[in-house]
Structure formats: structure tokens, C-alpha cells
Length: 254
Image 1: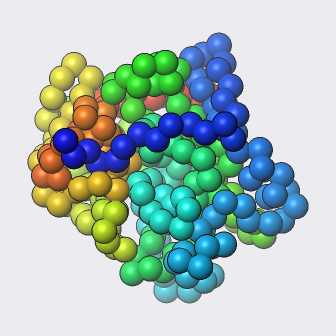
Image 2: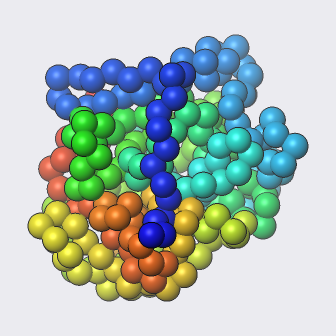
């Protein structure tokens, strides 16, 4: 059975904290220490096979959507979501792993805004306990060594849309494992289960997990949920964004 991305096992390097709210936070302490010292850690830029990461040219098209990297390869999709600090990225919970970096606007092997180290992750406690498909979403905090600007100030961001119903006309974006450019589709969403939504958009295979479902500047889903996003590249699923993700977002943003 094909899935959009196979959930990896957490490695011993991850530190996971379970808070009273049901929030689960993983912190990459090595990344934090190196960031404080001004050095990038666990980013594909240190890998010879990694994409070029020049400073963004003045005419670079800002995009909150980008590719998630680990070990020099992209494996999932993520997008910047608005926060006061401007450092928050949204993806699917089953995409979370150690040593992640985020390349917003990634295309044709180039990361126009550079690579952003993921320094902490947050998922719902129910996802960690049982991989509940209705909780397949995660927030990532990102930083870029030597850059005082936030990722949101450079790329823009979608706002988080919660409790908005199941029927929308959305733009869906994702990075297939086999492509260095994103695929984009417009489609109509529908309810699939009590807390699941679906959209029929062709060409979203492995690697597109975490891709945002955007309508009117609000992200109302990410590829994930049922069958980790779907067992065919032509139909994708998402957990419904309701009070659960709203509480997780509030816990992360304070």
C-alpha cells in the first residue's frame, strides 16, 4: 500500500516532553546549542548533495510553502503559519523526525531563502500515544543561524483556519520525493469521516505529506490523517482542523 510518507520512528536523540495540556514537545537540544553558537546544525546545507542556499534575491517570489529535508533529501512538505514570533511552520505529525530543516520556496534544486533549522516540534499527545489520524498535524519552530529576520517576514504566512466546515475550494501544494519543484492543484474538499476531510487532486505521491490546504489565505488542512494522507496520489486526506489544533497552536504560541 502506497502512502504519502511513512511515519519514522523517533530516535534516541529526540527529547520529548509531555505537558498537562496533552501537548507533546520535542526539542533538538543539539540544534539549539549550535544555533546559540552561530552555527547551523543538521541542515542539508552541510551535505554535498544539498540544494544551493543563496541569500534570497530581491525578486525572489515569496512563498510560505517549502520542502522538509533530512540527511540531504527532501521527504515531506510544510508551510509557514502566522505567529507573533514569525518562526512557526505547520506540517503533518507523521513527518516529524530528527534533524529536520525547512526550505521555503524551494524549486529546481535552489532554496532561495536558505535552509531553516527545526529546533523544536509540537504534536498532540493523542498522536504520540496512538498515532490517532484525527491528530495528524504538527508545529515546528525554525531558526536560521546568522539571520535576525524571521522566516515569516521573508516568505509571508497563512493564518490558521479552524472550525470552518468541510467544504472549501482550496489550493493544495506539495513536494513529491521525485521532484525538485512543487505540484499545485485546485480542488473541492468534502467530509470523509467525523474528523477527516478529503480532496481529489491528481499527482500528489510520496513526499507531499504536510502540504497545506489553503483557502482565502487560511490553511484548513495538511495532507495526512487517513492512511497518512491516502494510498493513491490522486486523493488526499487531512485531519479536520478543529479545537484540537487550535489548542496545540495556542500552547506553542503562548
